Length: 230
Image 1 (cartoon, helix red, strand yellow):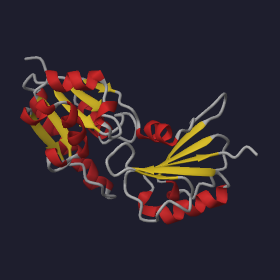
Image 2 (cartoon, rainbow, N blue to C red; image 1 turned 90 degrees about the horizontal axis):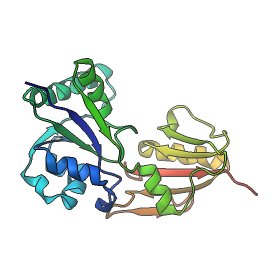
Image 3 (cartoon, rainbow, N blue to C red; image 1 turned 90 degrees about the vertical axis):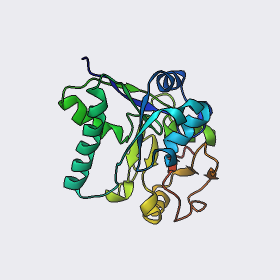
Image 4 (cartoon, rainbow, N blue to C red; image 1 turned 120 degrees about the vertical axis):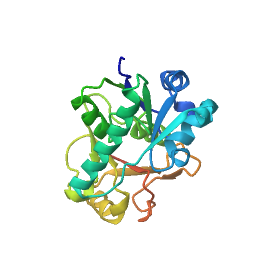
């Protein structure tokens, strides 16, 4: 029996209308849908997709636990466990569609499963979705890069105490847990700063300056810091 294909499918940043037609088609055409989290129907990615594809509720939903822990050995073990779970379906000739927020190539949990699946000889295909930082820039009415400006997408910037001194625009992701430190870096950078929390979701909030960003901003917070051109 031919093995199935594992698809990593981005469902976009939050607004169901931002899902791609290809993502919708793959969900409709396949019976096994994997979702990050312990309870599939509670996952944000599921809720986004279900708003467009109500048939999703009748699919075989496979929750894949992807813990946010720092112990590398433990997290590697969980990733391998998740990949082996998907392999059980792939070995039956069934395709597996793993739905994920944003785009599957940008800080995505599926990438960890992809490494294991490909090492084990399974076919993996990635289906792009609108990344959160593109959606946030659009919500803010900002161009991320013009002419020859570089674009820096930086995770957890507080770890490196990055002075944010390179030319171009910085996008800061995954920094909510250390927002107070990140805000101090932003103040010192002299950049124009705006941010979106829960972009394109029901609880969306927009911040037009460093001072407006709360220290307890939520996990889905994204900052755009542009060079000043006086």
